[in-house]
Image (cartoon, rainbow, N blue to C red):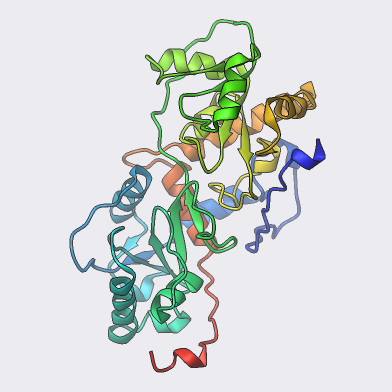
Length: 351
Protein backbone atom coordinates (compact mmCIF):
# COMPACT_ATOMS: atom_id res chain seq x y z
CA UNK A 1 0.00 0.00 0.00
CA UNK A 2 2.83 2.40 0.82
CA UNK A 3 4.25 2.09 -2.69
CA UNK A 4 0.96 3.23 -4.21
CA UNK A 5 0.69 6.36 -2.11
CA UNK A 6 2.16 9.53 -3.56
CA UNK A 7 4.14 11.81 -1.29
CA UNK A 8 2.41 15.17 -1.31
CA UNK A 9 5.21 17.72 -1.70
CA UNK A 10 4.14 20.66 0.41
CA UNK A 11 7.70 22.06 0.82
CA UNK A 12 6.34 25.41 2.00
CA UNK A 13 8.90 28.21 2.12
CA UNK A 14 6.50 30.81 3.48
CA UNK A 15 6.14 29.97 7.20
CA UNK A 16 3.19 31.55 8.97
CA UNK A 17 3.82 29.84 12.31
CA UNK A 18 4.82 32.94 14.27
CA UNK A 19 2.85 32.21 17.47
CA UNK A 20 2.47 29.07 19.58
CA UNK A 21 -0.34 26.67 18.71
CA UNK A 22 -3.25 27.39 21.07
CA UNK A 23 -5.58 24.58 19.97
CA UNK A 24 -5.29 21.10 18.58
CA UNK A 25 -4.19 21.26 14.90
CA UNK A 26 -6.51 18.36 14.14
CA UNK A 27 -9.48 20.70 14.67
CA UNK A 28 -8.39 23.20 12.03
CA UNK A 29 -8.15 22.88 8.24
CA UNK A 30 -5.33 25.43 8.16
CA UNK A 31 -1.59 24.90 8.06
CA UNK A 32 -1.12 27.97 10.26
CA UNK A 33 -2.80 28.37 13.65
CA UNK A 34 -2.94 32.13 13.04
CA UNK A 35 -4.32 31.99 9.51
CA UNK A 36 -7.38 34.13 10.31
CA UNK A 37 -5.24 36.78 12.01
CA UNK A 38 -2.95 36.97 8.98
CA UNK A 39 -5.94 36.90 6.62
CA UNK A 40 -7.48 39.90 8.38
CA UNK A 41 -4.17 41.74 8.13
CA UNK A 42 -4.11 41.01 4.40
CA UNK A 43 -7.70 42.21 3.96
CA UNK A 44 -6.88 45.55 5.57
CA UNK A 45 -3.49 46.21 3.99
CA UNK A 46 -2.85 44.43 0.66
CA UNK A 47 -2.42 46.77 -2.31
CA UNK A 48 -1.85 45.65 -5.91
CA UNK A 49 -0.95 47.85 -8.86
CA UNK A 50 -2.09 46.59 -12.27
CA UNK A 51 -0.22 47.64 -15.39
CA UNK A 52 -2.36 48.89 -18.27
CA UNK A 53 -2.66 46.10 -20.90
CA UNK A 54 -1.05 46.87 -24.24
CA UNK A 55 -4.21 45.74 -26.02
CA UNK A 56 -7.68 44.38 -25.10
CA UNK A 57 -7.86 40.64 -24.48
CA UNK A 58 -9.79 37.98 -22.58
CA UNK A 59 -8.60 35.07 -20.48
CA UNK A 60 -9.10 31.46 -21.53
CA UNK A 61 -10.44 29.93 -18.30
CA UNK A 62 -13.36 30.88 -16.02
CA UNK A 63 -11.12 30.99 -12.95
CA UNK A 64 -8.73 33.44 -14.60
CA UNK A 65 -11.58 35.65 -15.81
CA UNK A 66 -13.19 35.72 -12.37
CA UNK A 67 -9.90 36.46 -10.66
CA UNK A 68 -9.05 39.30 -13.06
CA UNK A 69 -12.51 40.91 -12.81
CA UNK A 70 -12.50 40.57 -9.04
CA UNK A 71 -9.01 42.05 -8.73
CA UNK A 72 -9.80 45.15 -10.76
CA UNK A 73 -12.86 45.87 -8.61
CA UNK A 74 -11.39 44.85 -5.26
CA UNK A 75 -10.21 47.08 -2.40
CA UNK A 76 -6.74 45.66 -3.03
CA UNK A 77 -6.41 47.58 -6.30
CA UNK A 78 -4.41 50.80 -6.17
CA UNK A 79 -3.57 53.38 -8.83
CA UNK A 80 -0.48 54.46 -6.88
CA UNK A 81 2.43 52.09 -7.56
CA UNK A 82 4.33 53.52 -4.60
CA UNK A 83 1.67 52.02 -2.30
CA UNK A 84 1.75 48.61 -3.96
CA UNK A 85 3.03 45.44 -2.35
CA UNK A 86 2.65 43.58 -5.66
CA UNK A 87 2.41 44.38 -9.37
CA UNK A 88 0.11 42.52 -11.75
CA UNK A 89 1.09 42.07 -15.41
CA UNK A 90 -1.99 41.37 -17.57
CA UNK A 91 -1.40 39.86 -21.00
CA UNK A 92 -3.24 37.73 -23.52
CA UNK A 93 -3.00 33.94 -23.13
CA UNK A 94 -2.20 33.84 -26.87
CA UNK A 95 0.81 36.14 -26.57
CA UNK A 96 3.89 34.69 -28.29
CA UNK A 97 7.16 34.17 -26.43
CA UNK A 98 8.78 36.95 -28.46
CA UNK A 99 5.96 39.39 -27.67
CA UNK A 100 6.02 38.44 -24.00
CA UNK A 101 9.76 39.10 -23.94
CA UNK A 102 9.16 42.54 -25.48
CA UNK A 103 6.51 43.27 -22.85
CA UNK A 104 8.86 42.50 -19.97
CA UNK A 105 11.67 44.43 -21.64
CA UNK A 106 9.36 47.45 -21.88
CA UNK A 107 8.49 47.20 -18.19
CA UNK A 108 12.12 47.00 -17.15
CA UNK A 109 13.30 49.88 -19.34
CA UNK A 110 10.36 52.32 -19.15
CA UNK A 111 9.26 51.88 -15.52
CA UNK A 112 11.30 51.57 -12.29
CA UNK A 113 9.38 48.83 -10.50
CA UNK A 114 10.55 45.61 -12.18
CA UNK A 115 14.25 46.23 -11.65
CA UNK A 116 13.91 46.71 -7.88
CA UNK A 117 13.46 42.95 -7.43
CA UNK A 118 13.99 41.66 -10.99
CA UNK A 119 10.25 40.95 -11.03
CA UNK A 120 9.98 39.01 -7.77
CA UNK A 121 7.17 41.29 -6.53
CA UNK A 122 5.25 40.89 -9.81
CA UNK A 123 2.67 38.27 -10.79
CA UNK A 124 0.79 37.20 -13.90
CA UNK A 125 -2.07 34.94 -14.98
CA UNK A 126 -1.38 32.06 -17.35
CA UNK A 127 -3.87 29.21 -17.48
CA UNK A 128 -1.41 26.55 -18.66
CA UNK A 129 1.71 28.25 -17.29
CA UNK A 130 4.70 29.80 -19.02
CA UNK A 131 7.31 27.34 -20.26
CA UNK A 132 11.07 27.66 -20.16
CA UNK A 133 12.66 29.79 -22.87
CA UNK A 134 16.02 31.09 -24.01
CA UNK A 135 14.60 34.63 -24.18
CA UNK A 136 16.22 36.48 -21.27
CA UNK A 137 13.14 38.47 -20.24
CA UNK A 138 10.84 35.46 -20.33
CA UNK A 139 13.37 33.46 -18.28
CA UNK A 140 13.37 36.22 -15.67
CA UNK A 141 9.57 36.28 -15.65
CA UNK A 142 9.43 32.50 -15.28
CA UNK A 143 12.06 32.35 -12.57
CA UNK A 144 11.16 35.37 -10.45
CA UNK A 145 7.56 36.49 -10.93
CA UNK A 146 4.63 34.66 -9.32
CA UNK A 147 2.73 32.59 -11.88
CA UNK A 148 -1.00 32.13 -11.21
CA UNK A 149 -2.35 29.18 -13.23
CA UNK A 150 -5.43 27.02 -13.58
CA UNK A 151 -5.32 23.71 -11.71
CA UNK A 152 -3.94 21.28 -12.75
CA UNK A 153 -0.84 22.84 -14.30
CA UNK A 154 1.00 20.88 -17.03
CA UNK A 155 4.16 19.10 -15.89
CA UNK A 156 7.23 21.32 -15.84
CA UNK A 157 5.32 24.61 -15.83
CA UNK A 158 4.88 25.12 -12.09
CA UNK A 159 7.54 26.14 -9.56
CA UNK A 160 6.63 25.13 -5.99
CA UNK A 161 7.00 27.77 -3.22
CA UNK A 162 6.58 30.56 -5.77
CA UNK A 163 3.67 29.81 -8.11
CA UNK A 164 -0.05 29.56 -7.29
CA UNK A 165 -2.87 27.53 -8.84
CA UNK A 166 -6.45 28.77 -8.87
CA UNK A 167 -9.26 26.74 -7.31
CA UNK A 168 -11.35 25.36 -10.20
CA UNK A 169 -14.72 26.90 -11.03
CA UNK A 170 -17.84 24.76 -10.95
CA UNK A 171 -21.50 25.27 -10.26
CA UNK A 172 -21.95 25.67 -6.50
CA UNK A 173 -24.59 23.10 -5.57
CA UNK A 174 -27.13 24.26 -2.96
CA UNK A 175 -27.24 22.24 0.25
CA UNK A 176 -30.73 20.84 0.68
CA UNK A 177 -32.15 18.70 3.45
CA UNK A 178 -30.81 15.25 2.68
CA UNK A 179 -32.55 12.12 3.84
CA UNK A 180 -30.47 9.24 5.17
CA UNK A 181 -29.47 7.06 2.23
CA UNK A 182 -27.47 3.89 1.82
CA UNK A 183 -23.83 4.92 1.69
CA UNK A 184 -21.39 3.93 -1.04
CA UNK A 185 -17.61 3.71 -0.92
CA UNK A 186 -16.91 6.03 -3.81
CA UNK A 187 -18.41 8.40 -6.37
CA UNK A 188 -16.95 9.33 -9.77
CA UNK A 189 -18.53 12.31 -11.49
CA UNK A 190 -18.77 12.65 -15.26
CA UNK A 191 -15.29 13.09 -16.74
CA UNK A 192 -13.46 12.91 -13.42
CA UNK A 193 -11.54 9.80 -14.51
CA UNK A 194 -10.36 9.38 -18.11
CA UNK A 195 -8.02 6.37 -17.94
CA UNK A 196 -9.83 3.69 -19.98
CA UNK A 197 -8.62 0.76 -17.89
CA UNK A 198 -9.68 2.43 -14.65
CA UNK A 199 -13.02 3.49 -16.13
CA UNK A 200 -13.76 -0.09 -17.15
CA UNK A 201 -12.90 -1.36 -13.67
CA UNK A 202 -15.06 1.30 -12.00
CA UNK A 203 -18.09 0.54 -14.19
CA UNK A 204 -17.99 -3.08 -13.09
CA UNK A 205 -17.48 -2.37 -9.37
CA UNK A 206 -20.68 -2.17 -7.27
CA UNK A 207 -18.94 -0.19 -4.52
CA UNK A 208 -18.57 2.84 -6.80
CA UNK A 209 -21.18 5.06 -8.42
CA UNK A 210 -19.88 6.39 -11.74
CA UNK A 211 -21.72 8.92 -13.89
CA UNK A 212 -21.63 8.34 -17.63
CA UNK A 213 -23.15 11.75 -18.44
CA UNK A 214 -23.48 15.15 -16.74
CA UNK A 215 -25.95 15.22 -13.83
CA UNK A 216 -29.51 16.25 -14.72
CA UNK A 217 -30.07 18.30 -11.56
CA UNK A 218 -27.92 19.92 -8.90
CA UNK A 219 -29.88 18.20 -6.14
CA UNK A 220 -29.25 14.69 -7.49
CA UNK A 221 -25.56 15.54 -7.89
CA UNK A 222 -25.42 16.83 -4.32
CA UNK A 223 -27.11 13.69 -3.01
CA UNK A 224 -24.53 11.47 -4.71
CA UNK A 225 -21.71 13.50 -3.19
CA UNK A 226 -23.28 13.45 0.25
CA UNK A 227 -23.83 9.69 0.39
CA UNK A 228 -20.31 8.81 -0.82
CA UNK A 229 -17.31 8.51 1.48
CA UNK A 230 -14.79 9.16 -1.29
CA UNK A 231 -14.75 11.01 -4.62
CA UNK A 232 -12.23 9.86 -7.25
CA UNK A 233 -10.36 12.38 -9.42
CA UNK A 234 -7.66 11.66 -11.98
CA UNK A 235 -4.97 14.31 -11.75
CA UNK A 236 -3.67 15.60 -15.06
CA UNK A 237 -6.24 13.77 -17.19
CA UNK A 238 -9.69 14.01 -15.68
CA UNK A 239 -11.93 16.91 -14.74
CA UNK A 240 -11.09 18.19 -11.26
CA UNK A 241 -13.60 21.05 -11.16
CA UNK A 242 -15.76 19.25 -8.59
CA UNK A 243 -13.05 18.89 -5.95
CA UNK A 244 -14.29 21.86 -3.90
CA UNK A 245 -17.86 20.57 -3.89
CA UNK A 246 -16.63 17.13 -2.86
CA UNK A 247 -15.02 18.71 0.21
CA UNK A 248 -18.17 20.67 0.96
CA UNK A 249 -20.44 17.63 0.93
CA UNK A 250 -18.08 15.47 2.98
CA UNK A 251 -16.89 13.36 0.06
CA UNK A 252 -13.16 12.92 0.63
CA UNK A 253 -11.18 13.62 -2.58
CA UNK A 254 -9.09 10.71 -3.81
CA UNK A 255 -6.51 12.10 -6.23
CA UNK A 256 -5.03 9.49 -8.57
CA UNK A 257 -1.79 10.50 -10.22
CA UNK A 258 1.24 9.03 -11.91
CA UNK A 259 3.50 11.88 -10.82
CA UNK A 260 4.10 13.99 -7.68
CA UNK A 261 1.54 16.73 -7.11
CA UNK A 262 2.96 20.15 -6.29
CA UNK A 263 0.28 22.50 -7.64
CA UNK A 264 -2.81 21.79 -5.53
CA UNK A 265 -4.91 24.94 -5.01
CA UNK A 266 -4.29 26.76 -1.71
CA UNK A 267 -1.34 24.51 -0.84
CA UNK A 268 0.12 26.97 1.65
CA UNK A 269 -3.24 27.58 3.34
CA UNK A 270 -5.05 24.27 3.94
CA UNK A 271 -3.84 20.90 5.20
CA UNK A 272 -4.45 18.86 2.07
CA UNK A 273 -2.72 15.81 3.48
CA UNK A 274 -5.32 15.71 6.29
CA UNK A 275 -8.43 15.96 4.08
CA UNK A 276 -7.61 14.04 0.89
CA UNK A 277 -6.08 10.73 -0.21
CA UNK A 278 -3.34 10.51 -2.83
CA UNK A 279 -2.83 7.27 -4.77
CA UNK A 280 -0.39 6.24 -7.51
CA UNK A 281 -1.72 6.00 -11.05
CA UNK A 282 -0.80 2.33 -11.45
CA UNK A 283 -2.66 1.10 -8.37
CA UNK A 284 -5.77 -0.09 -10.25
CA UNK A 285 -9.18 -0.26 -8.63
CA UNK A 286 -8.13 -3.01 -6.20
CA UNK A 287 -5.18 -0.90 -5.07
CA UNK A 288 -7.46 2.11 -4.67
CA UNK A 289 -9.95 0.11 -2.59
CA UNK A 290 -7.18 -1.30 -0.42
CA UNK A 291 -6.03 2.23 0.45
CA UNK A 292 -9.57 3.52 1.07
CA UNK A 293 -10.47 0.58 3.31
CA UNK A 294 -7.38 1.39 5.35
CA UNK A 295 -8.95 4.69 6.46
CA UNK A 296 -10.57 3.99 9.83
CA UNK A 297 -13.89 5.51 10.92
CA UNK A 298 -12.28 8.11 13.19
CA UNK A 299 -9.94 9.32 10.45
CA UNK A 300 -12.80 9.31 7.94
CA UNK A 301 -14.95 11.55 10.15
CA UNK A 302 -12.03 13.92 10.84
CA UNK A 303 -11.17 14.25 7.13
CA UNK A 304 -14.80 15.00 6.29
CA UNK A 305 -14.98 17.74 8.95
CA UNK A 306 -11.73 19.34 7.83
CA UNK A 307 -12.77 19.21 4.18
CA UNK A 308 -16.14 20.82 4.89
CA UNK A 309 -14.40 23.59 6.86
CA UNK A 310 -12.00 24.25 3.96
CA UNK A 311 -14.67 24.17 1.23
CA UNK A 312 -15.58 27.86 1.51
CA UNK A 313 -12.16 28.73 0.10
CA UNK A 314 -13.06 26.99 -3.18
CA UNK A 315 -16.21 29.02 -3.86
CA UNK A 316 -16.04 31.77 -6.48
CA UNK A 317 -18.46 34.64 -5.88
CA UNK A 318 -19.32 37.74 -7.87
CA UNK A 319 -18.76 40.03 -6.08
CA UNK A 320 -16.21 38.23 -3.89
CA UNK A 321 -17.05 37.36 -0.29
CA UNK A 322 -14.70 37.03 2.70
CA UNK A 323 -12.62 33.84 2.71
CA UNK A 324 -13.82 32.74 -0.75
CA UNK A 325 -11.61 31.57 -3.61
CA UNK A 326 -10.59 35.04 -4.81
CA UNK A 327 -9.73 36.34 -1.36
CA UNK A 328 -7.83 33.20 -0.40
CA UNK A 329 -5.74 33.41 -3.57
CA UNK A 330 -5.13 37.08 -2.69
CA UNK A 331 -3.93 35.86 0.71
CA UNK A 332 -1.43 33.56 -0.99
CA UNK A 333 -0.13 36.56 -2.92
CA UNK A 334 0.10 38.50 0.35
CA UNK A 335 2.24 35.72 1.83
CA UNK A 336 4.62 36.16 -1.11
CA UNK A 337 4.86 39.95 -0.86
CA UNK A 338 8.32 39.88 0.76
CA UNK A 339 10.14 39.77 -2.55
CA UNK A 340 13.66 38.40 -2.83
CA UNK A 341 16.09 40.03 -5.21
CA UNK A 342 17.78 37.53 -7.51
CA UNK A 343 21.32 38.02 -8.78
CA UNK A 344 21.42 38.96 -12.44
CA UNK A 345 23.28 36.55 -14.69
CA UNK A 346 26.20 38.13 -16.57
CA UNK A 347 25.35 36.53 -19.91
CA UNK A 348 22.06 38.41 -19.82
CA UNK A 349 23.70 41.80 -19.47
CA UNK A 350 23.61 42.63 -23.19
CA UNK A 351 20.07 41.34 -23.79
